[in-house]
Length: 275
Image (tube, rainbow, N blue to C red):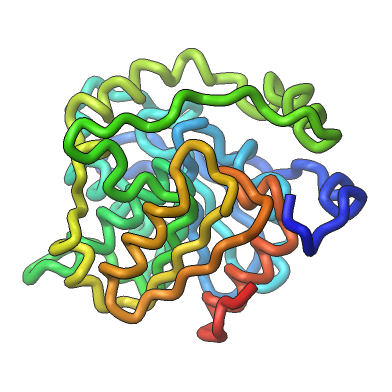
């Protein structure tokens, strides 16, 4: 939890999502959540596989200023789990097709952890000549697995959640917020097997070609993707902005929801995303 948010402030925001919707993308069913009006903000979840878990504490606040859309990414229930090769380009094509289907071109595209890697890969591929990916105006990489597991480097072993009122509430709610966790394991395995996740791409050269405004938002206490990865990515992406939240872990939208909303909203509006 951020030092700028009291325990009471962090706990008073419960998880809440609008009704689930569906759309066909490249012949496959994608489930998603949507609320609000204004500039579009697209949120890509991490390997939890659950948009409600990762975004439920900030969705309503973000929707006060944005049209907020959070898909269940391809392969993660309740979206379709097709028998396909989950290559980097296949995942990017699905995400691009989703944005085109809902008229979200020109959005701010934000992703956390695995979703942060996906956003960085999208930005790098979109920067290549002749890219056909849907246009994005701004990228936000939140504790993203950018360059993770380079040259055989393994991520740190998962730690048990801290024994705090917030995380006790999270553990209690997890079965409701992420009921498909076990059923999404095959998708996680296919992504690791077929994509660039964990293989050091986008590398420094690819990140260096990104010219679109990019925010990197990190928890200083992130045990899974340490902040050094955020600093390295920020150094590689020209003109990018890095914001580090003290005492915050791997999912700032849960640990420090109000800070997260303020920083992301400022960035999407073109204002400095300072802490």
